[in-house]
Image 1: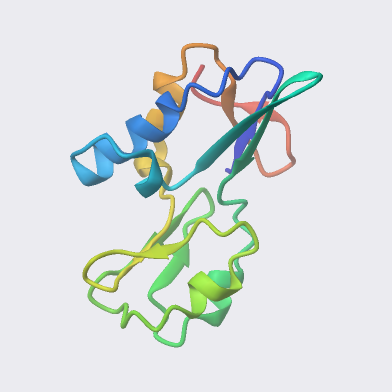
Image 2: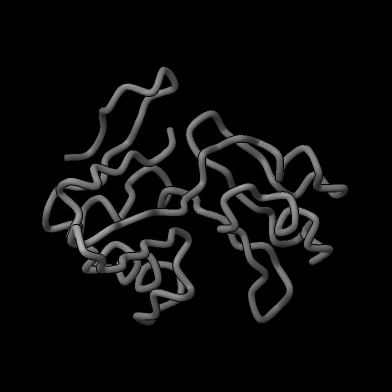
Length: 139
C-alpha cells in the first residue's frame, strides 16, 4: 500500500523524514529518509511536493539477484542478496532508492506495516492507500 499525501494539510516540516531516519538509521537526517518532502515558497505561498515509493515494481523487475521483493504491501531488500549493482537506483521513477555506506539498496519498507512517517505527521497529511488508491490506514 503506497503512501498518500494531502498537500493541503502538509506544512513541509519534514517530521516524516526525521521519523524515517530515526527508525532506520538511528539519527535525524532528512537526506537519508526513504521519502522526500520538498517545499518552496513562491508568490502564491508554499508549494510542497513528495517523492516516495509507489510500489511500481520496476526495482524488483530489474534486480538481477532477486534481492528486492514486494509482499503486496511494501517493498523489501534482502541485504544478503543485494550486490550493490544500483540498477534499482537507476530505474526508480521517483528517485527514492539509494545505496547505503555498505553499497546495499535502501528502499521504503513502510516500517514493516506501521509507517512512522504517518505516526509522526502532526497534520495528518500522510496516509496509506489501498491497492485501489483509496485512502485508508493508520490515522
